Image (cartoon, rainbow, N blue to C red):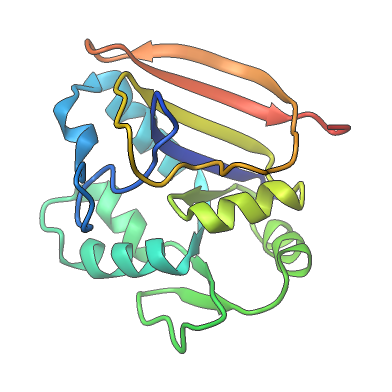
Length: 193
């Protein structure tokens, strides 16, 4: 049975919008001002290699599908991104043409258990804020990993919106990477929260 892992880049004030650029956002690419070092790069590499599939919202999927097939020199990381199974949650996307992509149209409560049962490794979710909020609301997330960058952006889409439910988390790991004070925090939602 696979584990659903949400992995996000976030600013200290909770912004997750356009960390790598490519969007019309005044702070797009904000993570590139930091050095996450070999440990940070290894963390992201190992995370992807441990994953059997990706679960993405439509906006993140479309950005990834546009970028990854054309990135030259991405090596083993790029090969895995392009070849692994990808599930995109969307009620509007007509087709998913990126290699090994499937559009999911059912409810999260129905679709996610089926995906988990068909993949023994992690199912990785990146970006996809609306999807992540839905997964957390449905109590479908097994692990929440945040790579927290020491910057206050002051504006932008926040991962967790006001008015959300209360979910208590148990810390699994905390470690600093790179030379700029980036921290990786890994949590498991508590069952009775």
